[in-house]
Amino acid sequence: MLYFELFLQFFLIGALSFGGGYASLPLIQKTVVEQQGWLTFTEFADVLTLSEVTPGPIALNAASFAGYRTAGFAGSIAATLGCTAPSCIIVSILAVLYMKYRQGDLFSNLLTAIRPAVCAMIFSSFAAVASLALFGTSVFSEIALSMLNTVSLLLFAGALLLLGTKTVPPAAVIVLSGICGIILF
Image (tube, rainbow, N blue to C red):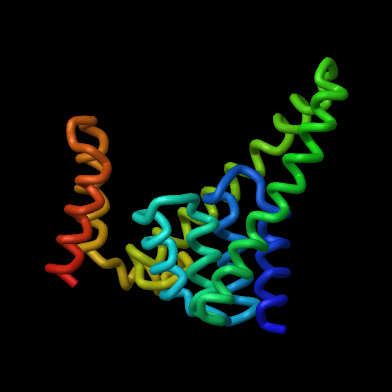
């Protein structure tokens, strides 16, 4: 029954997420942390970190990790299949529809209307992770501002500056940030 629940929840996430893995992160967070309680918010932040540094799509990595933490290897398979199934179904249907109606503006107008929502979902995910990393809590508040982690803020600023130079590869910034995190925290 738990495997079916994992499959179903990640099927819904996959079906309701538009704009890639980052856009699905708020839905994954709400499901696995708030609704189901499969992970704590700190564990979810770890999921994001691991999903970023491991190869593959971030949403599938997050689904696999949440499924594994919840029900072992079989849970990982159930969550991953649930997350990918809607995309396969939707892309197959859209391919047929596109081939039939590609002369019209239907798809162009649809994608134009969806963009603002996708941007908002990506920003929501960024805000949640930034809040946890910089303030030690998952929400912005006066209490969060009083708990500002200066070291994290300096690491963030340093990484941002290094990435802005375009001379340091992003992978090197990630590795350097990880080393600083190990040493300083």
